[in-house]
Length: 372
Ligand SMILES: Cc1ncc(COP(=O)(O)O)c(C=O)c1O
Image (tube, rainbow, N blue to C red):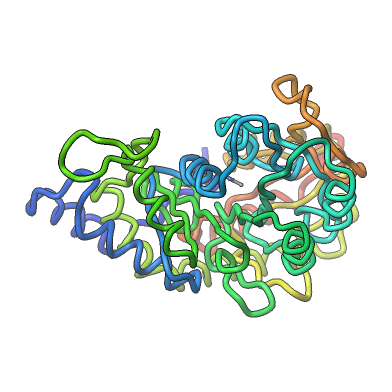
């Protein structure tokens, strides 16, 4: 048996254990603490924003953003059809109805032409638009932003896995009215579990901070509104700070790994590398290839598994799943074609050249030939 190569694991080769030990020594293990404040400062700076508010994960960061954007029960929120459930669930948890919009072939993210059609003929009051930067590649934000500005609707970036990416030279997370990041264990930069909302609006930042901690005012048990308990702990922030210190190095490793895969799959007609566009500098979070169909994608995952290599099919569309069957949608067929056909390959920033060479050699043996 060869050594198993995992899909995307944390790369904890910096100050993580030292900072965790400091949390224990200094008795700062809960949601107040110097690492939380320092991470907020550093993530705001990385995204080119004035404010950042830390939360326990990307899912709760989205929920905080929905509330701060003023999304109310009965409202509608535009979300891409091809995304992680948390994006649409955030609208649902705010009492809103997601409107599933299709994505482009070019970047696999929200299609401006589809958004325009929705805004021209909305199924109800739309209070926010969520754009996802897919797999670490930026969406084409400018046309989306211009549509949202005209309609007077905030554009919120779901940059869960895209930290380090740039759009026309600007950092993702700094493009829309608000943005969120995830620092889950499978992300390039991890806190174990963690999230962040970033904004330039001071009053919005104050509200985000308040509702993330029960919206309690002062030391007495008085509340300004119905809040949440979503604050990141200092333990998670200790890990996150150590990761931020090595972020440039880890994003560079991800890009190197992606470029090597791109070369390896170039010219193949049975798989296509993940998007590259002239406007975007991808952070290459989770290197993925698009297969010709779902059966082939499953077979590729199986083939890799037989060689002790973890690969995984990526997102399925949400609009055709029972839980969202009631939701309005405007689809062009692109998301449906992507659904279940994209396969992610091992791409931890700690992946060695030897490990990647082994993955590429196994990829080259697929599709399996009779007796092969
Ligand atoms: C697009 C997107 N949004 C939101 C999330 C949720 O982040 P978390 O897992 O930190 O809650 C993820 C997680 O992978 C994601 O991919």
